[in-house]
Length: 168
Image 1: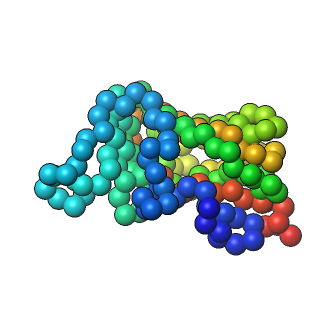
Image 2 (image 1 turned 45 degrees about the horizontal axis):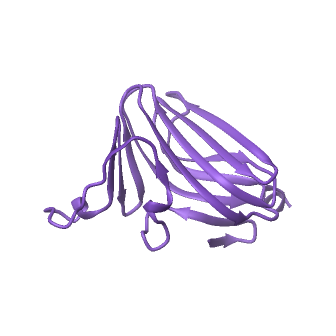
């Protein structure tokens, strides 16, 4: 975990393999996870996952994703993470027009879900998606990206936030 301030801590950051391990995430419908030892460019050597209708590549600023029309990218991670006073999970990324994002978390107190549907006027180059949660222990977290058209975007980080502390 990377503390940001007294009310926020990053639990996943997607831009640096020292702090984020692809193998800790379960990703649905993976077709290929190419070994990159003999590829030509620096960017070809960065981790890439190819699935049915999607591709993920880690670049210097996060996970870049491409999802094709009417396909989806589903990422799940299991945790045993004490969340104490934190009451929000926050995902930052770029979500283009035509993206439906579904965030789901399981804590020791229940299951929580939030959906975001990015239409033209709501799409953003960078946005924080907030999922309200309760409990003492984060057990599971899912990110689903559905495409209403071919999309390209980015995941930057996942953070725990104490909204009450920020507002005080």
